[in-house]
Image 1 (cartoon, helix red, strand yellow):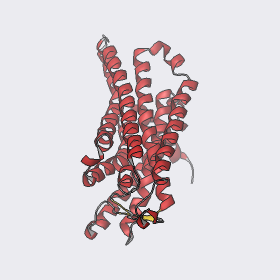
Image 2 (tube, rainbow, N blue to C red):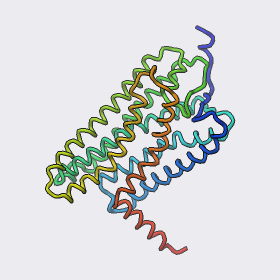
Image 3 (cartoon, rainbow, N blue to C red):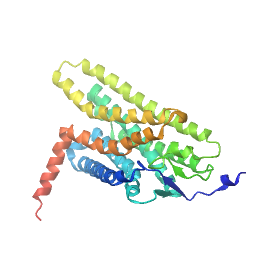
Image 4 (cartoon, rainbow, N blue to C red):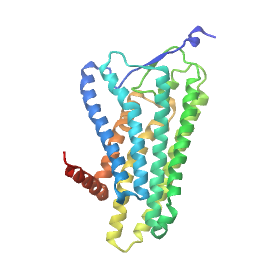
Length: 313
């Protein structure tokens, strides 16, 4: 075996978002603000939906878990990305790279599953309102959350282990700002065909299956809405689904662009821009979209803030 193949890599060098020194400080400030909004927004969503008794429905149960996933999603990448803007060499230890990849994959898959569960919840609420509490029982809701967590953890560990038990060729520069599966595959000198198939087939299967659930749910919802005689009922149904649809279109569009294409057609510059969008922007946008478009969430937040102001100092 070539001596180079036996090289033990102890750390990786991350290329970062940009190699232009004059942009490091502005980017640090921009992404720090984005990350802080994401953390505050998602933590706020978790606290509000947990504290307010009116937000104990399945819809807000899933929304709370979406906020938790977005918080984990952004935190698995955000802090390290911010550190890289202020250090001279953007390195990440070998083990930390594996951990970051594992958590990142787990949270991405979990988000797809939760969005599918939310689409199904909307379908039941609009198409079977009389049986809603029976169908969407507490046991069913927990099942729709726990099973995706277990599935995403399994697939995440499988992908991460397959990559990191493979042989790296000594070249340790990752053309990205975090440890992602596609850039890491280019550093392998052993045959990466099986790992590539796991990543490609797994990504396509997760995206297509979850999107199919969303599309079927909303086709049935649309059919039910069109049969409604009340204009107020149609408006309420559309407003209930509007926030979720915005999130679905943004996330799925970005992920399809990133993962469901052959490795040879990837441009890491465009991939980095897409990655910035779904690792930083989307986790920030989700709580804003759901809070600004939801009267119940705004009402609960207003009530909590009002009660806090009454507390004597």
